[in-house]
Image 1 (spheres, rainbow, N blue to C red):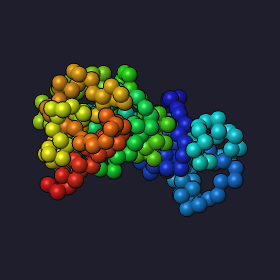
Image 2 (image 1 turned 180 degrees about the vertical axis):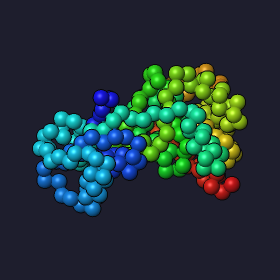
Image 3 (image 1 turned 30 degrees about the vertical axis):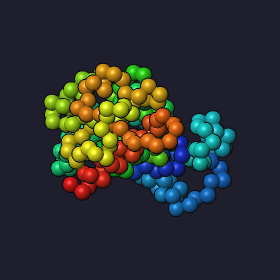
Image 4 (image 1 turned 135 degrees about the vertical axis):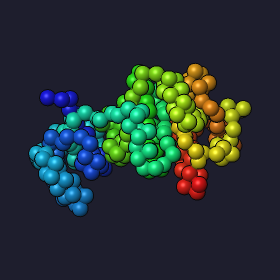
Length: 249
C-alpha cells in the first residue's frame, strides 16, 4: 500500500477531487454537516472516484486537522510531485512561454500555500522547491492554498542553483526578488518572456549563491518604516505584474 495522508477543508478536498491527480480512499463528513451545494458536489465526486463516504463524529476530525477542517476531510494518496521536464513540457504543450516560480527554502506552510494559490491563479506552469530546509506540500499547505496546490505541478530538487542553470540553458530568464538598493524596480522590468521568478525565505531572503545565479534582481518600492514585505505578499505582487505584462504581450 502506498503512502497516505489526510487533507482537510472544503476547498482543499473539492479541488483534490476535481484535479483527479490523487487516489481518494475515504471521504469523512462530520455528523451534522449540512449538504450544501459544495458539500453535495464533493460527495458526488468522491463516489465517482470510488471513495468510501463515511459520517464521523466531529471530534474524530478534530484529531486529524485544526479547527478549520470545516467538517470535511479525505484520506488520499501522497502528493504527486513532478519534475522540471514535465513543467517545461506543460508550457510547450500549451504553446506558451515558460512561467515558473522557484521558492528558495520557504519554510512557513501558510506563506507557501498563499504563493501556490497566487501561482495557480496567474497561470504559472510549475513551482520548484528544494528538498532540504524547505516546506513540502503537506495537508496544511494544501489547505492554505485553498486547494490550488492540487492543480499545480510542483517539483522538488536537490540543488536549486543547478536547476537555475538548467533553466538558463533553455532560454528561461531567471529573476530574483530581493530588497537590494541596486535591484531594478519590479515594474520597470520586462516580464513577458520565458520566466522563472525566485522568491526567498522568511527573514533570510534569497541565498547568496542562488541570487548570484539569477539573470537579474528586482525589488518592490517601499515608502513606510518597515524594511521588508512578507515573502508571500511580495511574491504575489511580482507574480501579478508578470501576469499583467504577459497577458498584454
